[in-house]
Image (tube, rainbow, N blue to C red; front, side):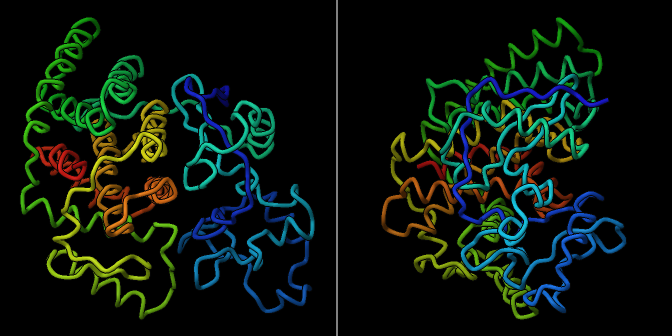
Length: 415
């Protein structure tokens, strides 16, 4: 049984501006209709595609297929002008359903599906275009046509040790998204309030706390989280040395998703990545740019204060975190394996990574809106990137939360 589609209670805007970024590094999984349509197009007879592989298996043992990539990660059908060859030759309706539906996405909950935007698209990250409600009718038609509308899903865990029905799960999620929408505080304070709430909730024994008692507990934890956050901003203390290594390694994984990163599938690239891993783990000397045209910097220089960023510059980041919290995608994107507290912790860690990356990308100059949009695109890609949704990243995030380092990282890099 498919669920009804619903927009977020806060507005989103988007239109395609033909930048072609969605055709680079994306895994376009094909359904049976897509495969038949591609085979009927007879690309093997086209002079530009003879002896060229256009399909590859999705996974070593999988029976599904995806569109092939070139060595630089771009789709095999992307032309030099960044437009789609399928679209050019056969029209918009001939493209795979994933391509026609992007960058909109579905977040299934108990009784409905949120339709929201993936912000790896720069137009989505900047909220450039028409209101999303103007796209909903066409998106609904495409989703039903492709059979992509999901049915009801089980709720994620509240904490690592506790799972509850949807009503109580949504009550906890509501508390977190109230923190994120509280405009009397800057973004970093909102996220730290949420992190402190998650840390306190993880310490609670929830087995016998249900209904009104859970509501009372959440009210108390909300007030306690506000108090726990205050000392972190009275005196900004750097995170512990033992938290620096996992943070830098996480930041390196994110840098590979930056839109300016020039990927190349080769053994030399893998060797360079291993060398970069070793240097990031040490955290001393020059920071390897590793296929990024960033100004030279040392690890010490990336700890300097960034300075106050204007509301205009911060808006793409604010929109990203607000909409991630309201849609609950920080937990649902991980297939229900992560708890609410773990998913929110990973989401909030993204702010520290974003501010560290802005120091690296901008060097001595102040960040601009365009720089922040690129960082938002990077964070969004991380939500479905295997190294950042896997067991190791989950363990690192959990350890940083338990050791009270996530809040310190956020406060430190927001200087």
